[in-house]
Image (cartoon, rainbow, N blue to C red; front, side):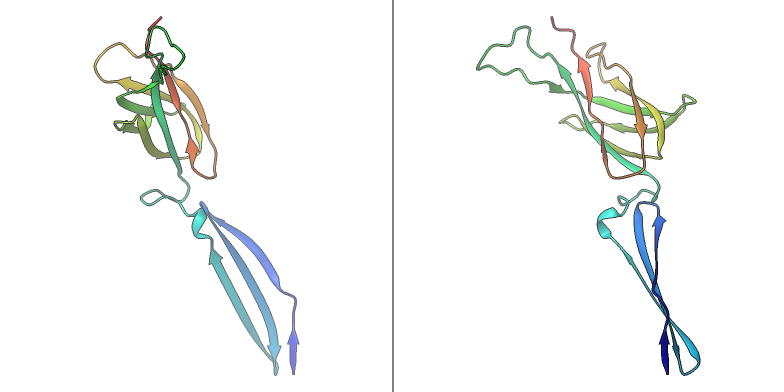
Length: 153
């Protein structure tokens, strides 16, 4: 005699990985049999080298204007900034830092929370990069671009 109970489904959060747990119980000849299935979606996994609760932060640091006068047909796009992006926490301590690449791109991981992003520019006073207040929330990759001022007028 087989008597089947209702299926129980539960979503379990494990950092950035969501697992779906399904359990089914059946009574077979007076014995209880349990079957369980778990699965994790690969597209929700944390980036390699980070803990599951850390959020991957990525962005570009650029400076503009790069020309004193912009003319039609002669674009004057912002230039990448060479330096270091530093994330400081509420207490002022450094939470993460990364050097910018040649194209101004940077990346690091942070726990959810409130941060100030500062840019330490290599070689001089300009460009000036104002601090950027950022709230990091649990979830997917966050893109945080930082715009700096070259001082050209």
